[in-house]
Amino acid sequence: MRMIKIGEGLEEIALTLKEIPTYEPVTHAINYHDCTDEVLESLNMIGIQDHQFFTDYLESCQINGCTQNANGRHILPHRDLEDIRNHKQQPHCPRCTPINLALDRIKKMGLGEYVLNRSLHTYDISEDPNISQAIQAALKGQGLYLHGEPGNGKTHLLCAIGRRLCWLGKRVRYYSHEAFIKRVKLSFNDPLIKNPLDSWIDKADVILIDEMCNLRPTEWSKETTSEMIMELHREKIQLIAASNISPSNLNKAMDSRAISRLGDLLPNVHQCMGRDRRGSGFNPFKGVN
Image (cartoon, rainbow, N blue to C red; front, top):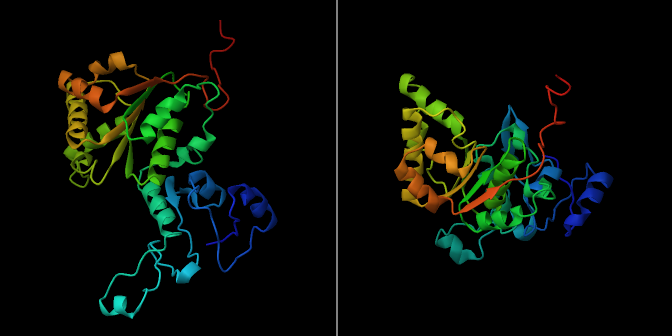
């Protein structure tokens, strides 16, 4: 993996990349307290492979005897012979390992190629300045429901919040509601497909649901969606959801028990504002009489 020398200040990144793009130092130094996904994107540490999100590990910083480990959990030498005699586990490097663990969490979110570079750093709040309060509520562990017109940045914001929560130590999972429901249905007739309902919240602290309830409801889909909401409520898992559907219309996609619990799961509701951010805003009906 290509290594790039980085100064203690994040403001030096652009200059460093421009001046010494192939420099391979013995050690590297990144301000790990401020390191976030947009920084690692600039270092080519985050990218897309076969339409799936992937991340590379930071190499060993080699500070205080840090030794590289294949799983990114770099280790330091034993402090003394007593630790060796007692077979104590070698401590993890406090500089490299937290970053690599966060990268692991981001990789396991289940994001696709469309969210590359979709971070809070790249989200334009100029057309929706009130969103800051909703973002802070979500980062503090509260549920959040984002709704609004198609294309005004809901998915970008949903995934960006999820990625920032990964940096805060949370285990986050992303699901498209419609795709998830379809996969559950496919599992009924194909023994090779595991029912995702069996493990969808395993080892998760936060669940992201995109396009929530934005599907044609049937009795079966309403029942399945209701089961999902009931399980999240029972396990006390933080939910952050985005949809074109207004809160008042969610009762068409689930039963009254789930709606009651949804109020606990989503105490914060924000209507996203602004223009359609997708592409150039092409309108196929423009000029048509």
